[in-house]
Image (tube, rainbow, N blue to C red):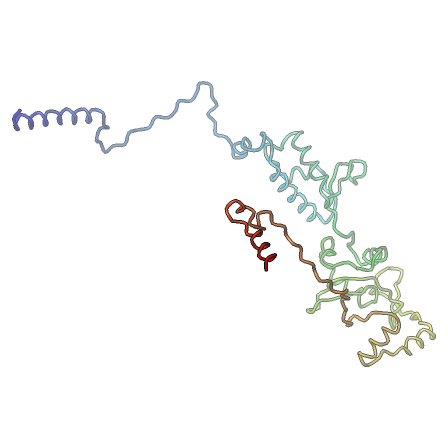
Length: 314
């Protein structure tokens, strides 16, 4: 075949390949191809779902998630706290909360009620104990104190002398600072303060142990008081206490404590060390160690007889 015939055959084959590829390729056009939507089945509801209904199906098991219930419980606790610590009926609380779709109904409301009843800062009142004869909830502060008289009674009932932090006292009595200042000036309570003068903790006290101590009147208001005689301490006790003199020198104070059988806090603690024992080193018996030339017994010559003969002749 000549060169011209080969070129003609190549061009013919190339034209066939190009025609086949063109038939299978997309048409070159600038207009986008319209997309066809999937047809909806007949009889389907075409109404758009609400926001709550759309997210309700994605929750666990079709019910409300635990995080959603906890969020609602926190809002309910804050609502009851802002209610001046008064009971709020269960129906009023439901109207205020506006429960989501998956918590509405008897089953969802019962779940929400159980969550409120198990909360440690809420008190559940049944219809028999509630003032209005309905199921109610009430906020339970850290300390049941809302007035100066209740504070004095509450401090008197405490079993420990740790007092009450003012921060916790404000949980149920937000505006307690003026009353605390008044009770402190009257000698009814002791108040420990921070560096800036802010009350930090309150303790019980008795005005009878203060000079010109005011006595509580029938009205119960410490601001309207009259002076009474101060409780006097026994003269013998005052004399005994005044005669106690602490040593001025630290060394003398340490000696007095040791004489009384007490250990001073500044004493150096001596750690008693027993007799030092030399630690014996254990010998390790190595199984693979070379002990003798037993493995060369068949190679080396035995000259022990020669040495013995020389020793006998010599």
